[in-house]
Image 1 (cartoon, rainbow, N blue to C red):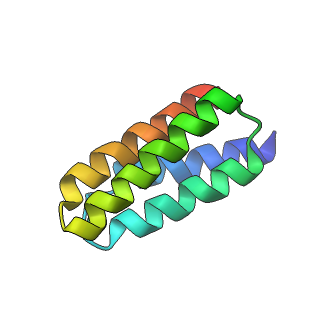
Image 2: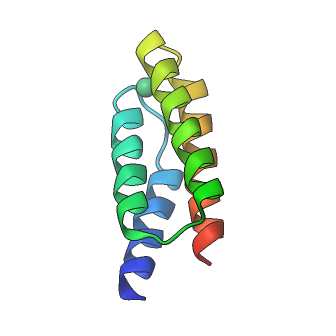
Amino acid sequence: MLKKIALAAVLTTALATAATAGHCPADAKAIDHALTILNVSDDIRAQVIALKEEAMALHSAGTHADSEDLLSEAMRMLLNAVS
Ligand SMILES: [Cu+2]
């Protein structure tokens, strides 16, 4: 339970932070970490991973704002799955 609360805090902070070029990998890392801790359905897990991978492709292509949008969506999905 405490793990989930701590994680929710991390994800919420990440969501509140302004998007910058260096932010995408940090968010992707937070999502990876969340997936190792959280017990989410295979369906949610697959969707979150797909969003993250698409986001990192956008990040590599230099479109960080679009990448951040997808990463935010992935994090919201995880938060919704937890609460
Ligand atoms: Cu980026």
